[in-house]
Image 1 (cartoon, rainbow, N blue to C red):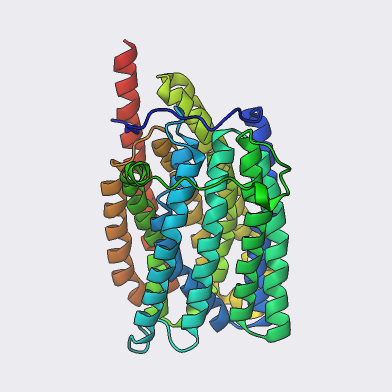
Image 2: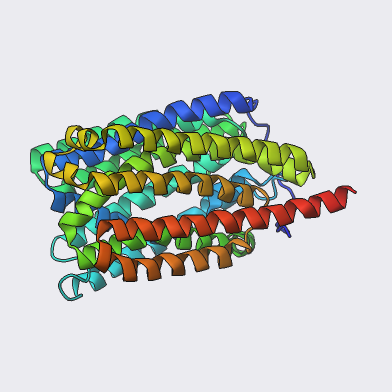
Length: 444
C-alpha cells in the first residue's frame, strides 16, 4: 500500500537538466568520502586535543539531540526526493522545515536541563548542558541544508549536494579544531561548527536551490534564496503525510543511540568515549551508503511508481551488494590491523578494545544493508508500514542493552545492536517482497 499527497501537482519551474544515475553516484561518493573524512577528523581532533571523557560528552550530546532533530525533520528530504508527481513545491517543504526548527531546539534544551537534574550516572551534568544545546543548534541549522538536498535529489543534481559537502566538511573541521585549540573548550568548537553550517546554508545551499528551480539569479547571491511558502492548509497536509516518517526516523535514531545511553549509565563517559570513537568508523561508511541510497532514490521511486518490478529489484539488489562490500572491506581491515588502526587514529589506550572494534564493524556491515532496504521502503512510499518494524527493533535493542551491557560491557551493546539490525533487515525485506508481489499482480 502506498501513500500519496492529496495536493494537486504544482511544479516550481523548469529544472536544471538532470544528471545520469552513474554521474550522480560518482559525485555523491566523492563528496561523502570527503565529508566522512572531515566528520571523522572532528572526532579525532576531540580525542587528540581533549580526553576520552570529552569524546564521550560530545557523543552524549549527539545522542540526545539527534533523535529530536531527526523526528522534527519528518524525513522531508527523502519524501521530497521520492515525490515523483511533484505534488508539493519546494517552498512547502522549506516552510514546514523552518516551522519545525524552533520546536526541535526548544525540545533539546528542555531535555538537556532535565538530564542535568538527573542523579549521577543518569544523564548530563554541569557544563554538558551547554554542549548539548550547542550541538542541538548545529543540528537544527544542518536541517536547513538537508531540505535543500532533498530538492537536489529529486531533480537528480547530486553534484550540488557534493559541492555543499565539500564546503561544509573542511570548514567544519577547521572551525571545531580552532575552537578546541584556541579556547580549549568543546562548546567553542561546536559553536564554530554551527556558524559554519549556517554560512554554507545561506551562501550556497538556498541560492543553489533557487537555481535548480529555474528561477533567475546567480547561485552565490544570498538574496536570491527561494522563499518558504507558508500556507497553513498545505503545511498541514504535508505534515500529515510526513508525520509517520518522523516517528520512523525517531525510532531508527534511538536504535542507534540507545546503546550509548546504557554505556554512559553503566560504564561511564570514558567507556562511552572509547565506544563512540570506534563506532564512528561505521558512521563514516554509513555516509557512503547514504550517498548510494540518496542518489538512487529518485530512480527507485520512478521504477516503483511505473510498476517496473524487475528494474526496482535489480537496482535495489545492486545497492545492497555495494553496501555489503563496503562493510566487508571495513571488517577485513579491522580484523587484519584493528589495534594498529586504533593507536594511529586515537591513542594507545583505545587499542585495548580491539575485540569490540571488530564486533562493531561486523554489526556496521549489517547496518549498511539495512539502510539500503529502508531506502527501498521509502522509495516505494511505504511509510506507515515502517512504524511497527522500527518499534519492534527499538524494543529488541533496548531490552538487549538492559540485559547485555551490565554483563558484557561494550560487547553487550554491540550484540544488541546486531540483533536489532538483523530484525530490521528481515522485516524490511519481507515488506518489500509483499509490495513487489502486489506490483506483479497489477501487471498481470
